[in-house]
Image 1: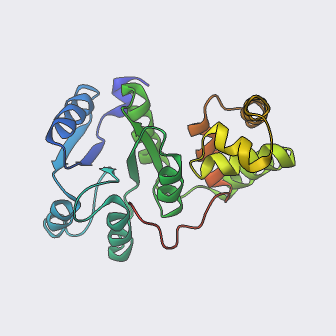
Image 2: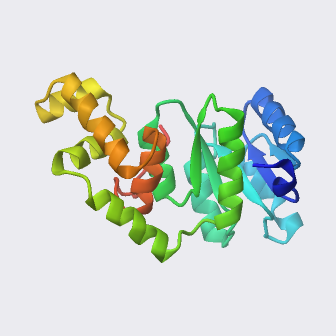
Amino acid sequence: MATSERLRRTVHVIDDDEAVRRAVAMLLRAAGMDAETYSSGAAFLDALPAAGGTVAGCVLTDVRMPGLDGFELLRRLKQLGVRAPVVIMTAHGDVATAVQAMKAGAADFVEKPFVDEALLDAIEGACGRGSAVGAADAVSDGVRIAALSVREREVLELLMMGKQNKEVARDLGLSPRTVELHRARMLAKLGVGSLAEAVRLAVRAGLGPSSEGIEAG
């Protein structure tokens, strides 16, 4: 996406790691966005009154932080009526956490370490569509999920729980190779190129564990 299309986006970056905050802020500014950084969720919430309780742009927050973690921050923002879309940063392979975050209200997620373009696209997408997905989009995603076979959907659901191929194979009484084949067919039917994309689509369609009682661990 061209830099000119990313102008006038303000991203509030929340991470307890100073190096991450600095690197992300540099990336965002190089892409023509404004970046405000905070060392914790509490620091970000403390800054809200100065902005009249409103937030321009979107929020990019790590999920696992001491004190106020990403999940609790999502809850607090919802309670305060802050509608700015939130993009969650999760550890690579932490699919279950990504699913929980989106169920809790996050607009999208990116995995650490992230590819620069993937992060920028996630932020731009979140800023463009807000935190809600249109009914037509949800129906379309639901139709794609419905096209999966029973076994392909079972594989997807177990992967969304954070299980690896070998664990899925054990749970379903299949060989790891068979699980790999079901996974490949599932991605092809959904028209996506990665599990992360499949997770986004499935959550939008209402698939996945409930967000109630989620813990950041």
